[in-house]
Image (tube, rainbow, N blue to C red; front, top):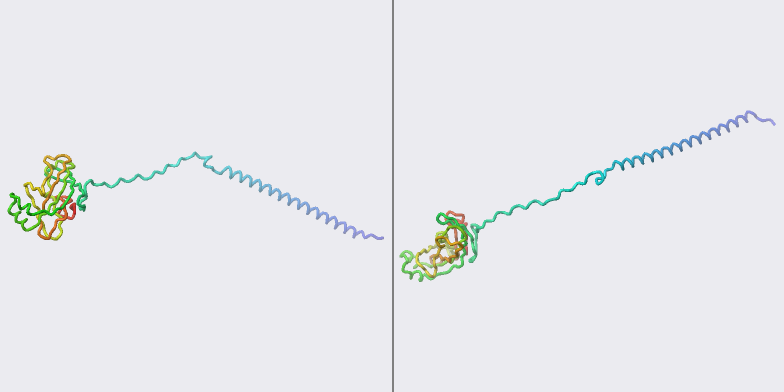
Length: 244
């Protein structure tokens, strides 16, 4: 039997070549696996280094800094309350029976008094006409009009204002539109005794005064206005203290 030597050699060469190719593939595959493992290990190591570095660099205030106390928050200081005058304000309207504290200038002294209008009364003109010391001009006025009495309590608070009288500092509150006359007298008149503070002044003295007014028919006195001339309360303005 004839053997084809050439064919045998070709076959053998192909088998050897195939074996060689297979072996090379195995080697290449092994190298790839080794590289991948190396890369994985390197990546893991790098990640670990980064974690450790980040941990080492992280700052914890309670470990790396001195504790700092916060400044306490203080509320703003309260503002001072507005100044309140001890006097009844000019232009005040009071009821009969209410008290006003007011400044007084008398002669060359200054002081304080408390005034209370306690009553407004219709008088009997015949009582005044019966007074023997009544002037002829006042008698004529009273014969054609009506007399009114306003009772006021004066209480001394402070100051050398002895002898102070209300007469020149007051005017009536009228209803009916007519005028008025203030009736001044120096004699004792029991229905309406006119009194001022003692002279010299007596501290804390209380005096019951009475002021008389005459009005024409149809005009009534219903209250009293107080306000000295050239003061913030002057009765000639809209700022007197008013009782009605």
